[in-house]
Length: 321
Image (cartoon, rainbow, N blue to C red; front, top):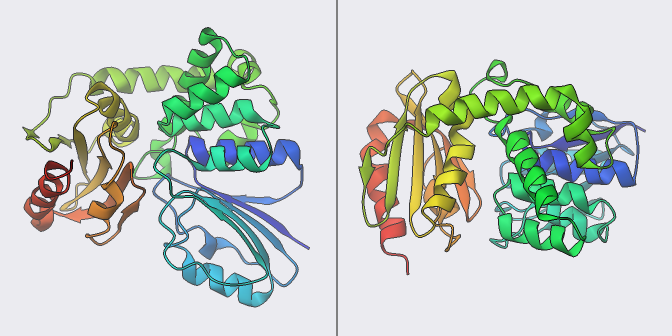
């Protein structure tokens, strides 16, 4: 029997897997990639009797591969918070999907584990920009404000590492980053004892300083649109920048478009932080678009569709109440 751990390369995917493997250790082939690299189940060459864990990866984008794996006789544990579409019916599929606007995969796993590895759930939730449930969970564990601030910074850095157009944009491949994280049952020990964290934090802070000097290209009642250059710092910081803007201006939506250099833009959308809804609905109207209610994106928006996107962005969030 072979085992596979398939997970999104962001903080939520890494921290969800961390909780599971601390609680239920097992040797497995790990499969991950860039945050937007979600067609991951196609890489799994499983047979009857094999076991597959899938975390924080859209079922809607992996349905065909999932159906194929189930047909081969592989068993699949699936936990996620993105729009799933039709969920296959199979006795081999153990599915835990919750698309509520205020949850993430790390919190779903934490609930299943009854708080057994809850500190890492806090990190994952902070990283996925769910500050309120992260803080509430951390406070319930008796964690101090200082510890919570450190866990929030860690979550942001783990999330930041998942963004880029190519793996070369990242400081660490997500599979390698998980391997660095995994020995630490307490995330504070990772912060204090793993030298790689200091490197990650330094690069994040450098990229963030550039982002803070960026101004919106257009603003409306609906929100703000930022056009970012085809440069490494922009490709890496776009997700965290969107999250920070959402918290800074909680009543407006944000769209960040990074020039891909080939006539397309990669798009990140954040719904208003105080009204986490509509981002996925907007992005699914365009090819390669998807995500969740609070945060979604388009992998490659054609230059010719830019005006249409901005019009739909303004309509989606300008008409919301």
